[in-house]
Amino acid sequence: MSIEIVTKDELLLLKEDLIAEIRSILEENMKTIPDGKKWLRSAEVKELLSISSGTLQNLRVNGTLPFTRINGVIYYNKEDINAILEENMIRYNSP
Image (tube, rainbow, N blue to C red):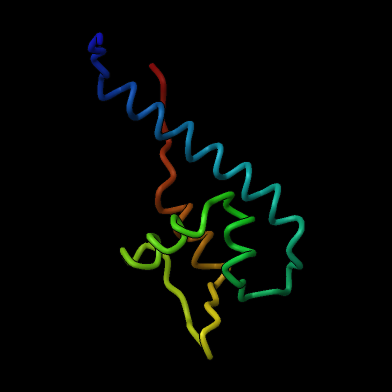
């Protein structure tokens, strides 16, 4: 087993790439959701972000993604999802 050293800059680039990929997936999937729709169900959010049920649950449990539960159905505000993506966006200026 070999050990590879990863620099902080490499980790920042990886994070930037991941957020860019999530953003492109989100933009692609946003086209399928009507613009007037404010609240999304879990299945729609999972498809929108291309994440699993477990990942969505983790986002709820750790407080990253606010939600509303009515009669056992969980709803997410589309604006909250966009805000989280914007807050976590990394702008990396290469030298």
